[in-house]
Length: 261
Image 1: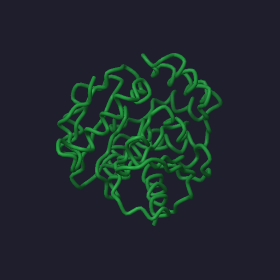
Image 2: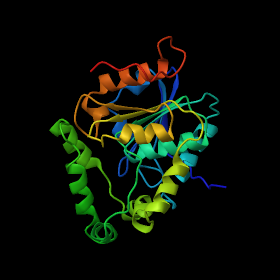
Image 3: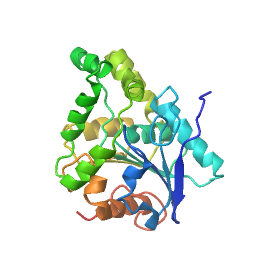
Image 4: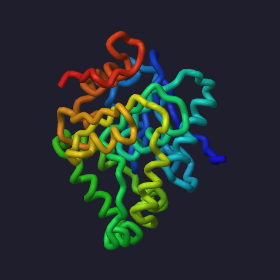
């Protein structure tokens, strides 16, 4: 049985239930620019090791997904959520759908295939240069994001070495076959409406790779080139969530409808 920790969270808005999951080194307030609560009853969480939530290993996606479920249980929520995750939060959202019922998953700019980190990168991540390395990685991912927004993200980002090592442990400690099995364990076995929304380029064969594992999954390119498409154009992002979640007749997720671009 997975042991959970009590996450910091907030609950706002009305409408269909949505759970928002942030990325590595971030917290629930990195969603502040996105008006989710105007259209959804929105639960935003701080993952373990982030924001105001406890630091408690392990930091794997399935454990973190269990923490999120515990928040909904504590609220007495019976409605099945749309779960939206950015970056590492997209992996946690996927893991949540592998274990618990969802209306759908929106994975924001996080591909699922995993390969081991090269030896020199793993050593950097383990060592004192991890903070500078991660700062450089994120700097390359801002793309066309408004520089003022990127600066704000950089200023508020917190890099905790133990959390970084815990999250990236599979990439450091496992070989290709073990990683493939790890990813397979995070993938929903039941049919799941799944939108993989990317601001940065993905491999040409990624859509095929993903739909082979999650039948019907849609891979879509956002209108702005950045790891943060939800922050580059928050109004567009919320429209896309609503069209995905509502479907043509407002009764459930529909992956064939595209938001305005």
